[in-house]
Length: 228
Ligand SMILES: O=C[C@H](O)[C@H](O)[C@H](O)COP(=O)(O)O
Image 1 (tube, rainbow, N blue to C red):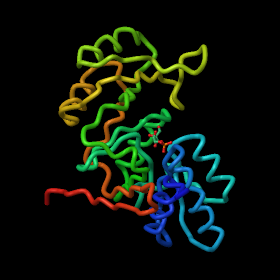
Image 2: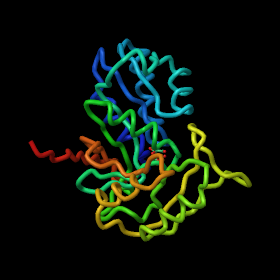
Image 3: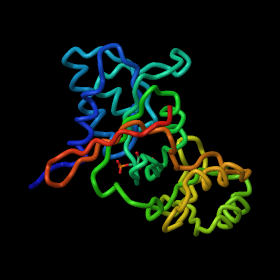
């Protein structure tokens, strides 16, 4: 069957968007389909306001006529829809393959709900096959990278052709090859304690629902189990 599984998951997630909501727009090739569908619904009369997690998503939303607001004009979001590079059954995520992790984490953390949309190749038993993106300041990056390596990975500075890749925030990304991350919460704490690390791509306790598009055309929905 020839299904666009990213589109399938993304469009399902857009069904959760209701009139009057303030919506966070994710980044990447899956979030792209969600933004496209939202644009369609806005043209049909859906009333929402949105903020974007990257310049690319902002541009796409603007072209589609999705009303964007400044961060200073709202204090929280109802729902954010975003993709992921990997996700496990506990809805722990690796994000940042597209370099937008910092803005994505700020936006998702300030949303009442986050829906992660993905194709089934992103669902894994253990996180870490995908190199974990870590956003670091350019100043003394060599030292920061050396500290990251001590956590048991091979960090590689992301490149954009001949140049070092820069995020929308002017920082570098160290793609950190762990292969298997035994404890994502512990690794998150260890990374946060390194001076020079701005943010890392581990999203823990942030996603509420995962909508996974499957190659056979079906959709799996996983809800996060939260302790009350
Ligand atoms: O920085 C980029 C984001 O975290 C993306 O949401 C993530 O890389 C997944 O992107 P895609 O849907 O293109 O695989």
